[in-house]
Each structure stands twice: as C-alpha cells, then as structure tokens.
Image (cartoon, rainbow, N blue to C red; front, side, top):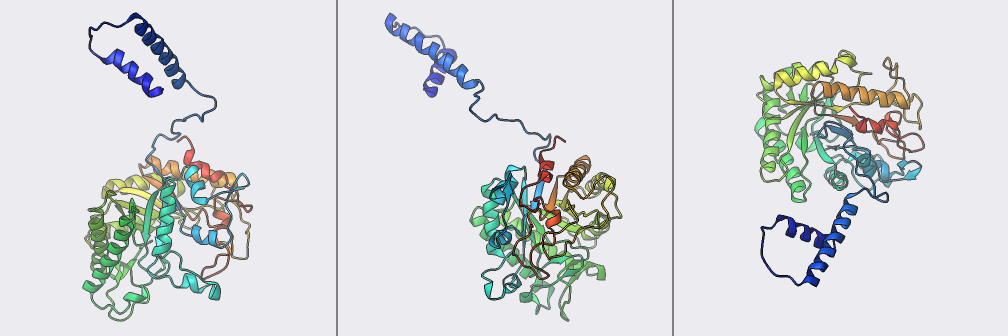
Amino acid sequence: MYEFCYFMYVFFTQQQPFEMKLHAAFMMTMIRQITFCSVLLLFCCSSDPDQEEVKPPVTTTDDFLYGADLSYVNQVLDKDGVFKVGGTTKDPYKIFAEKGTKLTRFRLWHNPSWTKEVYGDDGTQLYNDYQDVEKSITRARAEGMKILLDFHYSDTWADPSKQFIPEAWTEITSIEVLKDSVYNYTFKTLKMLNAKGLMPEFVQLGNESNCGMLYSEAPEGFPNGNGCDGQWSNLGQIINAGIKAVRDVAATSTVKTKIILHVADPKNVDWWFTNITSSASVTNFDIIGFSYYPLWHTTVTFNKISDNVAAFKSKFNKDVIILETAYPWTVNGNDGYNNLLGGTPLSGYPFSEQGQYDFMVALTKEVKDGKGIGVIYWEPAWISSKMKDLWGTGSAWENAAFFNYNGNAMKAFDYATYKY
C-alpha cells in the first residue's frame, strides 16, 4: 500500500498537465484513495512509540577510530571465559560493536606452535596464527567493525625488548632472500583474506619496532634489521618489501588498505620516523602509530599528547593513531597470574571504574585535539579464564579490562559514545 500511495503522490504532483475525460465515479474513487494515502503517509512519517527511535550520532567525528585489540578473545572464549552485559551472557564481538567500537586489531604470528604446546596434551589448536586471525576478522566484520591486522613477523611477541626471527627464516643469509620471504608471506596472507572478502582496512607492519625488526638472537650471517645498530638499510628494505606486498594485494581489492608503522612510547616517535624516512628510505606508508601507557611512558606527560600528535602529523605529513593504551580499574587481581599494570595512579585518575573511564575520555580528547585519527585499547577483553600463555594461567590484564570480575561490561566502554 505504501508503494501505491507513493506512486499516486508522484503521479499527481510531478507529471505535466494532461487532458483526459474521467468518469465521475472513478474520479471520486481516486480522490478518496489520495486522501487515504495522505493520511497514511503522514502516519508513516510520524514517530511510532513501538519503534526504536533512530538517534543521531553522539560524536562529531564519526570517522574517529574507537578501537580495541581483541587478539586474545577467541582463546578466552575457548577456555571458559564469559562476557556479560547487565548479567546476561553475550558474544564479546557483539558487545564491543554495540558499545561503539569501530575498529578491531588482531596480531598475527608466523608459526606460534607454542600457543598449543602450553596446554600439553589438552592443546588442540594454535592461536594468533592465520586460521585464528581469519576467524576473528570474520566475526568482527559480521558486527560491522573495521579491521587492523598486526604483522609481528615473529613466532611470538615482538616488542621493544625482543624482535625474534621466525624459526622458518633463521637460515637466511641474504637480504634479498629475506625481503622475498617478507613479501611472499605478507602477500599470501592478505591474498587469502581478500579472496574471502576479509581484506583489512589497515595493516600494521611490525609491532613496537623501536629499534627495528627481525634481529633478536639473530644467527651469524642473518641480515637483521636493527636500526639501533646502524642497520637502517636492511630495515628499510624489509619494511618496503612488506609495503609492496600490501599495495599489490590492495590494487586488486575493493578495500584500499592503509599501512601503519608502530613504535612504543611517544618519546621515540620523532627519532624513529626521522630515521625510517631518511636513513631507511621508507616513505610509502600512511599512518604513524605509537603505544602510550602513561604508567610506563612517563617522559611525555598526559596533557602533552595533543601537542605531540599534532607535531608528528605536521612534520611527517601522516595521520597519527595511538595503537595501544590501557589503564587499571583496580589494583586487586582475580586469579593467580600477577597483573602487569599497577603502581601509582595518575593524578585525577584513581584506579577505579570511574577513573578508568575518565582516563579514556581525557586521552581521546587529547588525540582529537591533536587531529589524530583514533585510539586503540589493548586487550580490554583479556579477562580471567583458563587460558594459558608462556608465563601463567588466567590473565595478567584483568584489572585493566573493560569487564569486572563478574564478567559484566563496565563504564569504560562509554568513552566511545561520550559527546566530545
């Protein structure tokens, strides 16, 4: 009926004058139909108390990336982790999407066989390998969230203190062969994802690469990429090989993936990106990313983040994003695995549910004031469960997650819908 009424409206209001003789009874019928349609259209366009009100966006920058690293979430679910909203168990991917998360970040390890071995005879699968990442991307995409894929180029954690070489690459002695390995691995991974409609919107090449990549405990003759030892040329060739792979797959995809480079601590950003763009000749990337944990990274004060973000954006002509951050809501633990975050709280931000929320709102304001494009919280779903890693069982982060010790979503989620 709505389609008929719309047709009638268009016919009588949009057509040119015409002449035709109509039978009087037919004319009266047409008038009654038009009157009915007018009432119906008015009714359809008025508010219906039984329908959910369509609300306008609460933020003024809808494209800002409110992000969450959910790399552990599949493993937590497999090991009896339970996520709730208001006491009702719910899919964590759905929780994050409904709470305003726009971007999910997932780490990718080359061959993380240890993630199965830590469970002994109970181990059934690898985590943070290709299959696990594909599953994560599929579930996040189903909830409408964008994807950031983080290539560690390692079988385990890559961070400022360690950049271990994948075991499969340890016998390489030529930079040409290493470049080829990086290119083929990156290309193959993205090509498989693209073929399934899962091409990430963002790709991160390396993780917290403060000195570089692929250098920790390097065998003799391995062409490592340790910039702190002057190996900027090797590092540049390694990163450029990854960049080329991303660009080559994106050229055949409907998703034009943006490339991010990443260091930890804002104090290192200017030095590192100056060297990577000059000494290493790496320029074809899109975004500068850095980790900022203010309880650890104390050189740049909290209220200077906006100035730093603006300075990085201006100097390097790149977008800027905080790729990792976190803040505790309690000093108490929920299992026998010692928590990593604690110590003395920032002034004005107590270790409480409200303090964690206020921290995220204030940090997001800082990034927005500096014209940054997003903030990603590291592992807000790493709650206590029966999952294991190399150092313990449970979680070393549950006091900094977005869920309390009953599994319920907390106030920190609301930073993404705060009216900035």
